[in-house]
Length: 219
Image (tube, rainbow, N blue to C red; front, side):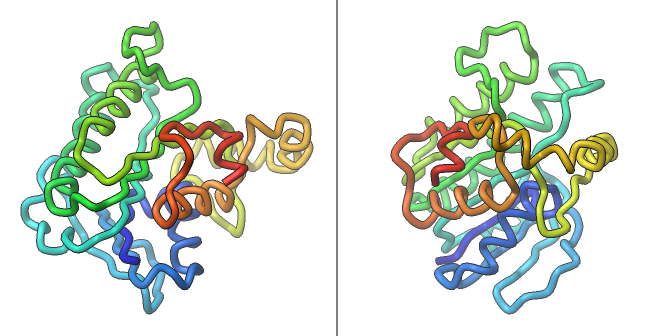
């Protein structure tokens, strides 16, 4: 199976890439990003691309793929709704629209977030935009679309967040994660569990499209 990853340098993307490289069923892991991951592996291939609103220049690289794991995301803090929509909704749909045209048999797995608003009418801005993104993805002609809504995520195996604030929070809360995960198993997951769950959807599918933390941990 040939898979594609967006956001492989972020915390979630690092976890997904790790599982793809470890799984023998994955024959190639193609990473599209604005910078290199810094990793080397026989199955890893990287394509640098800067314009996430136009993928026409690399369409030849985006054909013949079986699954896409879309792990790009930014915090909404300090952004207007228009700005957040541009980097969340528009970039995701630009990539997904291109991929659905080139690979109609593809499975597309998207990292959303706990609390996403599928009605698109709630008071929380980021939740509305994520909901609109999810809904638009479900309308595209993919083989299947899976929407991941994780809550708190514990990074493992040296994986770190690219966001400074999150790195500080993980450093402070790190020792408490095992306790919190035991007390609230449906609210906490790890980069390993999330990575394996996303890979599972690409390889075998899942019983439903929207996957909350408890579903992620079961997969």
